[in-house]
Image (cartoon, rainbow, N blue to C red; front, side, top):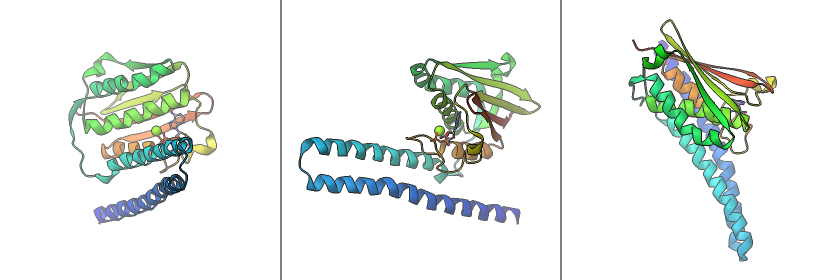
Length: 228
Ligand code: ADP
Ligand code: MG
């Protein structure tokens, strides 16, 4: 019975999501169509250039939304194996460093050396996606010199990871909307990153929470079971 209720809950969540997606995709498509119609009737070269620029950025936005959604499209296809947690997080830091360097942001680890060899049973690619999104969010919230600390501790049979940034933080009144589908404060955001991250962490029997102070920074906490 419980499985059935869970199944229906999942279906209604997916349905809601699909409706939201349809709506979100319709907006950029409508805009693309309008510019195409303008190009059709206007033959001067310089204006068609500015139209095509907007068209390209709208197409990029559709691509972003669709690629983030692909993760949700295959909820049952987790490919779990035993992995060194440290290797996963280290790779993610390497991948996000190029973006951090642009703003002079340093990414620091705070680790007990004994945790270097901790294994977790996970889909490493999905976890990488979660951590990349969290670090990108931190960088985008800072956009100036500062430090992002990744703090890892073990509490009983759980690994606790905190991503601490010195960004602009989240105003109290917005806190409730964070992580809801399509909620973004960025011009080119999708508002899907945290929702999908939360979904992936749940699939790993983990937990994700956030704490933020406007003007000071944000902490994202992730808890995952250790594979001993
Ligand atoms: P996106 O990054 O596309 O906007 P996310 O789901 O990743 O979507 O994040 C949703 C919103 O949550 C962001 O637009 C931002 O307002 C807020 N947010 C997320 N992480 C942080 C952070 N580290 N600092 C401040 N705001 C954040
Ligand atoms: Mg994001």
